[in-house]
Length: 566
Image 1 (cartoon, helix red, strand yellow):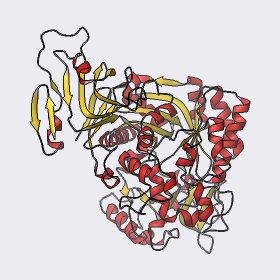
Image 2: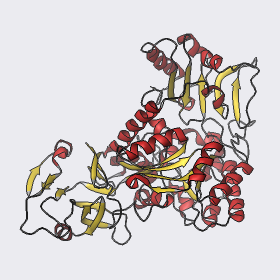
Image 3: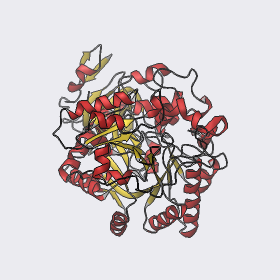
Image 4: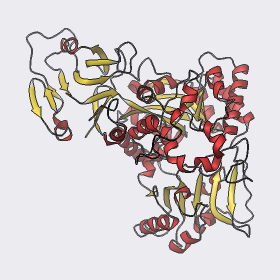
């Protein structure tokens, strides 16, 4: 592989060792152009995701924006004495990647808590927590995230008994992988004042032992009963978590996230970081469903491209139901593997409709979490009613996940102008047990990207991190193969629902930009847009399926400036 920097040539067997040398000021030229570029990038593999010219040889950047995209000679005509020239040779450049559904501060805190992802048994969960307890002061809360009983030989929810035996002297709260259930030990339940007489809240469920006592597992709206006892993080702790999460995002090639359901205390810190020039990410903020917070932001009005294009605050996040893995997703008929259970409605259809009407009146977008077919129908019904009450051109209402759909509801997205914002890696994480939950007929409406795309809608892609891994290349691989990292199943899980590679790349670039009303400034390598781009070590548009996950991010650029170098 050959890389050329400002007239000199380095030949390297590997990309990584030379990355720190990539950006070197060019030598002086005889005559400086009137408006020289700050940066010129050339490569044999530049995918612009711009329909006017999907491939390019080079581009030029000035003042944080693309000022030329096209031929190498055209870009080099903008070279001046101070222009940095980056020739990537066989490296691959794509528009800066966006995660269309994420939880930034939760990622930051997850990096600090007990990581339970991948635990193959409840005993392993307990061992990890007990090991952390030995390193912490007595009495301090132990928090963790990532357990998934579907990975265990015994797939029922755990009880607190084993956790109480291993960690009897401090409160423990462990979040399930999807964030829709938690496991608390006896001390945590005691701190929260939870007893056998504590009633299930509306839209939530307390799992119970045969004698009626809480087992330790709290589902959906019941989570708040115990979470309320956890001390709130300080502003400094929130800020530190955000900084750590942003760095993690940049490492995986992300330049932007759509941050879902954020409280004002976190939004304040996001704005503070951006104002100080310390937010290396473009944040599209969806305010959480809290009456006080919504009143504040509705009164403030939609905010666009604050702090030099780093923060947008113009959306709200609602919840229709729970999650499939914890059997909280609201279904039109009972679960195939739990006939007495049809899931949970976290919010009523009336609440969704009222919130959507209020948002539309104040110029805000609405995104609603809906996973089960009943949850999705409720969200669509609420949107339809709200749009009748508040006719709005180009509302771009969104359903987050759109995971299990009745065939009758699939065409409604296009008809109503609703965007299904989905997460390809949820499908590959859930596919080993999803059919058990849904049965062989209903499962055909699950993770149905192709069925939706065929109606003419777009499907922005995300990870829902920290539910799934941050790595967007897992998203890309899942979208085009419907296989996990081992290549299972052969040919893909319901492969007729796959995306093409072009669609998958759009789902991580221009489609999220459109879903955030940012398609004029972001999402593709085009003149006038923010100079955000991601450099990969191989061409994900042409390599074999099995090699996609061998790709790594070499560099991430935000506004023409490097925010990550491998």
